[in-house]
Image (cartoon, rainbow, N blue to C red):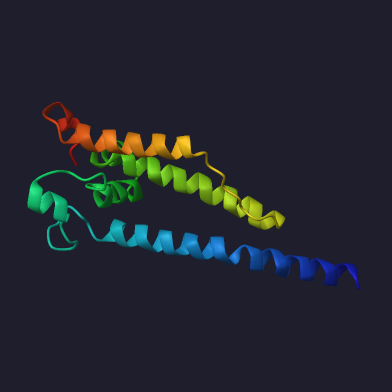
Length: 143
């Protein structure tokens, strides 16, 4: 096999391994583009949060669309004000996606072995965020 043919075969293999991360990125970019184009501050474009509508309580996702809209428009402070947990989720996704791409390009499977204690801690932080944003002194966490 010639050197050019090996490079071509290797390039096709890398492209095939990067297809899944590229597809996920395309889907996420499309979702962010839609939320960036269709303003969630305008009523009627998106369904209301059922928990907020029926109980008046903010769920951990309330303000997530407004936060994504602000991120698309480059307003990080507004994004943090609308939903700080969502911004942390966007950052976490970006880091995880980048690690996935590097592993895929090198031909290694991505193995995520998270200790249960970290998962419980993340859940506890999300629960704390939800509780605090619904208390009188947590008004600064309202979307």
